[in-house]
Image (cartoon, rainbow, N blue to C red; front, side, top):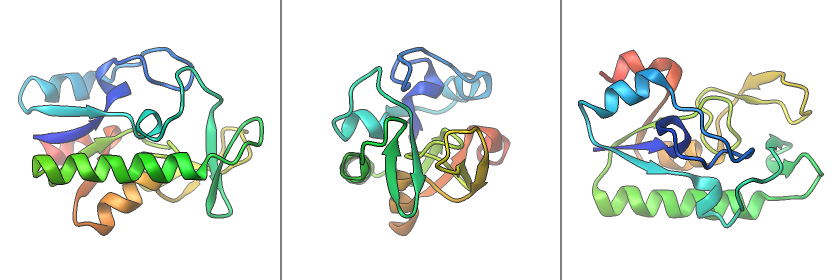
Length: 141
């Protein structure tokens, strides 16, 4: 079993309330049990919600609301789930302030990306859980 960003499985939890399933993730779910999580929802944020990006070590919504505590709470809850289920790997949404793996939006809400990880990815990796993005799915299969 692996954790998976719920949005990649087609669950309507994205910031805009829409679904955006990822074909390779759906195919992987036919071979491996993927446990869906949305750290942003687990952190208490609604769906839909303002998009959020990391900047200067914090997370801000597009309306400049500091949502860092929500993102940290969501990361903590996601880690609890992983520990309860004995999960050692995750497939997360690239560029997300919560789930990004290697690349995240730069905090300017301009669509630019920079090297970095989402809050949840950082915490999971610190706890020995392998996290890859949907763009790297071939490495997990």
